[in-house]
Image (tube, rainbow, N blue to C red; front, side, top):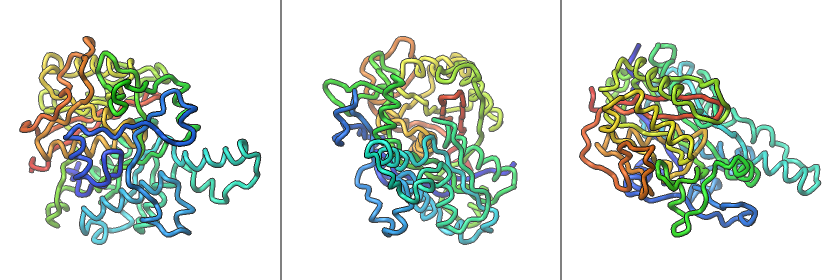
Length: 413
């Protein structure tokens, strides 16, 4: 198995529109969660979201092209271009038939589908946009990235709910590590803030209530007064290539994918399983040829729901034993919300940047810890000067898919 380097990062999310901006806002504890002020907000029980700021597709795409791009594909294309720009000459110098695109999304072209249904049922009109199928299909973001950059390797879309983009990165890593591909763009994109989507998630009773004093603090992972998650949108993409190739071309290396674990609970469609989560972490460590004692930090799935946070705490204790209390654990969804299919990729980016800066990012809004969640969640303030070379990032999904990435600092070479 070849070592796999991360040589490009692209991100657009509620914390910012570049890797540096996103990291700085996460480090400073600045929340991207806010009240929704759209016309349908009054029909929501808790009109909250974490949306991308300062984004207008007309700045990035000409009108004829824009008509064929749902917001999810716009995010994916912008993040992919960023990643390739930061990677330098990776793709121009490679065999395009051996470069793949791996994208995770949970809800695909949700905005376009919602608009189409509103036209059909709400307005009782038959004038559906001619590109509705192309706008709404889950595979559109990956397909557009391949088209944009003339990439002829596999173009694959993974839709395993909240684990989708972690799976996409893990599967891309496997192909490069095994030698079947020479490079890949891997990550996730999500744009779920349509009215129908928000009402559907509301009906599941998993969304947070609005914090009475500070709406931006409504998502509170591992807190005793947590009430649920906040939906977010955006995209995060990585460029992956063999370590030797990256070193030979003197590329900037942001970190390394060391391993990947994947399990399925097969027990309940929404209830998390301690055993399944622990098995995924163990599988990831085994694939990286590491032991629990080798892990320096953890990025938690940390949704802020009652069930997940207790289960994840218990699973970490099962895997790491007595040492679990000594590992800094960050839950960044408190700040950027839950990007569903893109969450794993965004948190992978934040984890790589944490390793690069020697910082444990804060779990914000943790004023009242849950006694059942009694680990070191780096509460309310970033912890600088952390000596860390390895990290795991957890993504646990509805449907029972558990995906864990093991990451290494670039300095490890």
